[in-house]
Amino acid sequence: MVNYKLVLPEDLNQFGYLFGGSMLKWVDEYAWIAASLAYPGCRFVTIAMDEVVFKKSVGEGTILAFVIQKSRARRTSVQYQVDVFYAARGSDPENRVFSTHVTLVNVDEEGRKQPLPEQPATTGGGGF
Image 1 (spheres, rainbow, N blue to C red):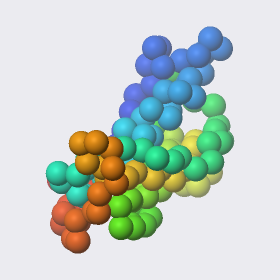
Image 2: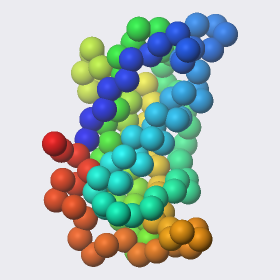
Image 3: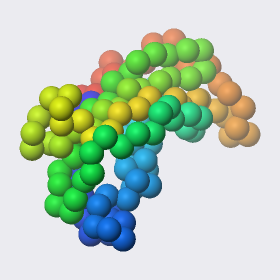
């Protein structure tokens, strides 16, 4: 699954570069969307985000490409690899801005872990 985001003035820090919190919000949101499309009806919450290292600075007007791929599924959780690239320059690793794994767990109304469905949706969280 690929999502795109335009970096706007409200996404910048005091030095004119992308605020790290904005990037983390988008990464979390897009991983949640991928999980929700792959497992309709599940109630996901984020339980972990691996290493947080920003590889390159990002300025206003940059279009970012978020490439989200499922890396593993367990009984109650699913993990996605999220790679962020400068969109105009393609998915070349040299143009990678950020990369991490996001783990989400399926919970019930009281927040207790629930098993994932046996078979994920055929869209796999990726296509339209």
